Image (cartoon, rainbow, N blue to C red):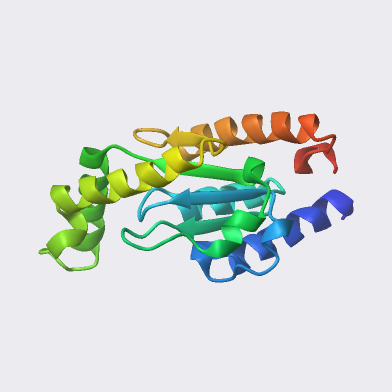
Length: 168
């Protein structure tokens, strides 16, 4: 056991505590803040990144609700947005509902509702041009994570910081 191991454990604990917007305290300690609507892989991506040593908070975007004001107090270079195609999202949501035994999912899986949610999220993303948007449609979790890490490592270097994988 070494410092890297303990940093990774700390990152995992932070990420679990800050999953799905449950705890927005100490948001400034996050290395990455993921924003996205339901079923854009926020939680699995957060957990994957935390195993690499990144402290991740993920916050859901809910149509018609403002983002928590705490997001405005953090460095926007930590924020990453996730999007997905409407067809893929509707399919994912329908499959989830079927697994839960709810054949008729109502609006949650309807293409009209999905399009509406994606458009709402896109409006938020356009208002915040410093937030990069990653499209997760058809991508493996590892692929999206790699793209995000590449961006974050670059941003941290510009800020004179090391990255979790660098021992910092």
